[in-house]
Length: 119
Image (tube, rainbow, N blue to C red; front, side, top):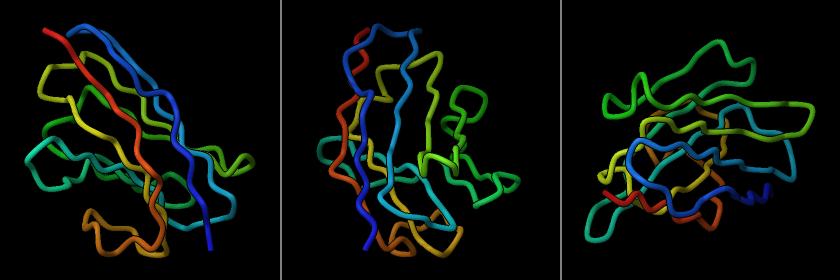
């Protein structure tokens, strides 16, 4: 069992930046971020494999968000720049053994952290 704890969410103005962190209690091959806005389904944001040389980004965040990980700390990060109001959502960290953009391929989930972008 791997526990995930997210941090770094908050309120920011459009155009601003935030960095989310997700600390895992153990190792996982793939770690990623998903988000869910009110009334919408959970959607993929970004993921990367253990070595960090394979990454996938959702089209909506390409060029603005950067995912990275520090395996010595079992931590994954999401640097979010040029934030837009439509990025407002609860952001969830996920971990598992399959590198995928599909939520049900992940075995472990964090509790979520709120990101609110004001216009």
